[in-house]
Length: 224
Image 1 (spheres, rainbow, N blue to C red):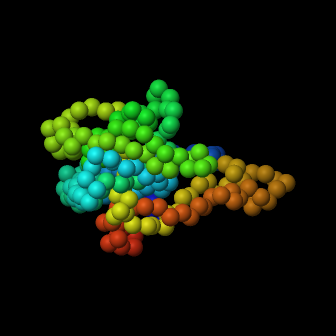
Image 2 (cartoon, rainbow, N blue to C red):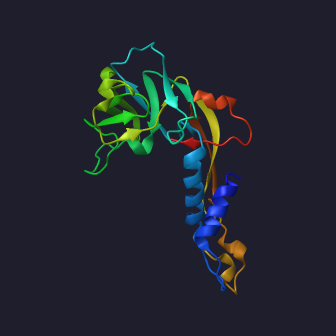
Image 3 (tube, rainbow, N blue to C red):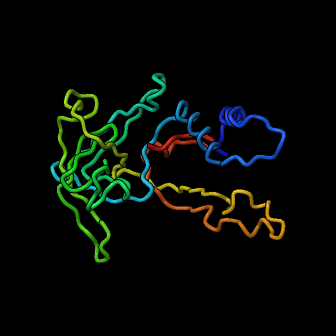
């Protein structure tokens, strides 16, 4: 599921036909489907492993509907409204307490752009008793809203996000390789089932933008 006929045909064109058996890395198939979906799939915002960001100078009770394009590669794809609030979620991997030089995401005194929204700057953070980042405190520049003149200010990082208040829960299935060996049936003295990856499927709860509540079976999207 999720592999379009067009991407499978493109994959077949890439690998060609040979007279002897060949092993093709599954990443080439995954690349083919990503390439096709990048052209046709509507974008949606979702956060899998969230950390809360509090934008300290954003009004506490303000709710802003930001108009985001559905697919930047298709000008006819339309737009949808995405709620923006003072508290948002970003991916935990998008923040580092002591980031290396080429880490272009969020860190102390660093600025990033939020997709379709504003530029924010990290002013501080809080850890829990186990030393895990619990909250990140940022300020925002109201002149940098996407689509307005101030948005032209350049920053190196762009992050996806969802409103902590308005996001909805969604079951997400993360698929890894089914087998731990690229050719599990090539071992004459072993059963291929010995190479099954016990962690090939992880089911988690993620936070996604509210528009996905109206998604129908077999709809396809690309998360930003």
